Length: 122
Image (tube, rainbow, N blue to C red; front, side, top):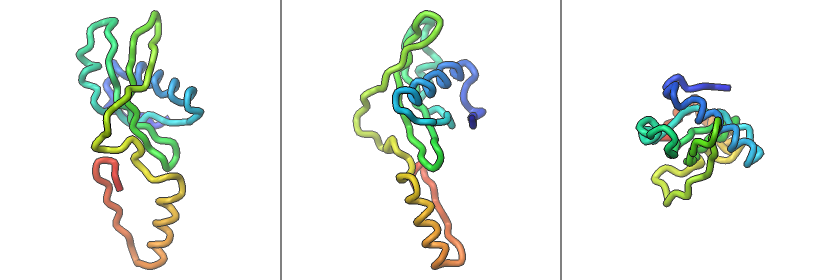
């Protein structure tokens, strides 16, 4: 599993457990690549719930999921957060195969191609 070293150590267990929960509920094989909007989690009191923004990747597809984390006994309970329309869509990459097919076609027409990624958009 690819781990982002910028994820605070104190949030790593909850984030990893959230990814496992998402993978089980959605029959996916996401890997955690980062956290966004996690400041609330760092300041949460013991036993208090909070939200985590997870950046997840599964091959060529990356997504952002906002989950609610509630401590429960020795573990955690998770739920998806119903969010309003986001400035950055939850699906950060195009569907599988679209980018690689487009890139191959462009490379056949040009000597080189420059890809620009801006805040998860390409």
